[in-house]
Length: 174
Image 1 (cartoon, rainbow, N blue to C red):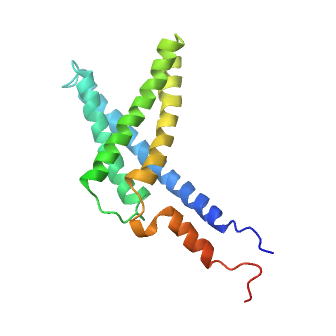
Image 2: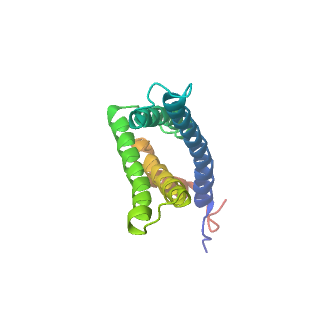
Image 3: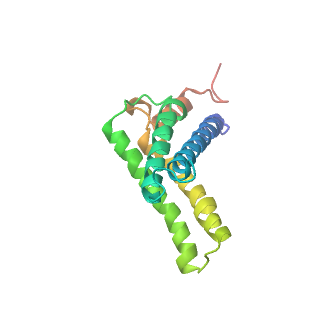
């Protein structure tokens, strides 16, 4: 009788908990870069150089944060992925982030326009808490599967199948 093998499931979970922790730390760093750049551009010295143009300042800040998170995710979170950096990868990264931003805006818009909630707390719960949580989950899954994929020789299914076939079973003779 063959006992179910859960080692590949355990390995998968451990690997993703570790990767997820690094991903969240890098995302936090990107958030700090975004906030610092924005506040310097808009409020440095009372009125920063882009005080009259907060949307331009926010765009610059978001791009700065995205550059930091791309480099951090490429070098740390997905360091085991050997696919070379390409314009295609950068475009996929940008697409995923635009999509994630739209998810956050959608959460805020739903709260504001469908539910009629417009308080500071409602905006922060819907846009920042719920929107950011959903966007972070989407980013993690799409970065893992699409932006920073395994090289063609090491796709996840092949990896699991190879590991599963090489593991001893209870009915195999040793």
